Image 1 (tube, rainbow, N blue to C red):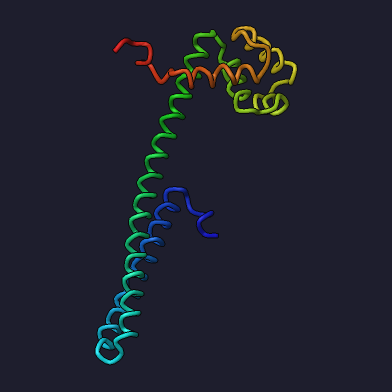
Image 2: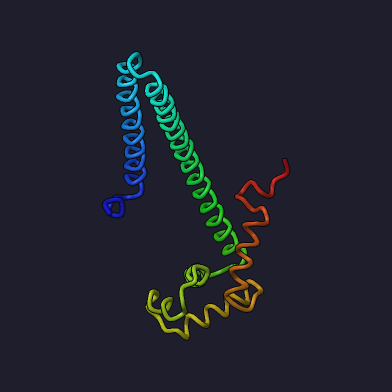
Length: 174
């Protein structure tokens, strides 16, 4: 439950600590088990051999656990960086399209909220205006973009992003 209270940055740190402590406990248990094995080696050879296999499996499990935890930590950091880059690319594509389409500041706000899926009534409330005004602005946006509804507007934005527009350098020859 505490992980929901913490900011995302600290949740990731807490998870790393928990994984690390769990792995260290597992390695500590392996060390205790190994010391017990050494003390019993001469007295009970078969039992000691079974314990040796168990110690090996325990240590191997801890090592593999740590390796996977590190791999997942690095992968998570990479995915977060890629998500931030994609978010920035989408923002750039949106702003570029808004400029190309000649949208007014009010139309930009309405277009952005529409793309986010906010209902017209909620857009009107957020912008402190009437639904009729939002509908008129939406119609103006659709006309400037060359689409007839919100779904087509979203499709245009997604198509631009998927179509390889990644930033200001995208149109330059290599």
